[in-house]
Image (cartoon, rainbow, N blue to C red; front, top):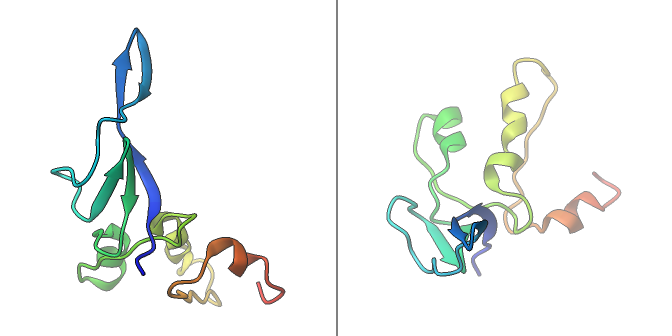
Length: 105
């Protein structure tokens, strides 16, 4: 089962107001690996992630955990040089709220 995580939005002007463009659905050119439903873009396991390329030197794809997008989940990797004891563990298919509510975390 693929975990999809809300990450981007398409807006439009309608009656002099900015509103979500619910006409945007499916795949959208320029947004590889994303699926759009009623103007909301969801990253999937096929979404290219710049953080993977930045930290490994290789392109990679993945999604967030269904609550938090991958960019935000992996941001702490930027602190590696400042926090020597930092350990980053990615838990595949772990739900964000369940994970952070356990005693271990």
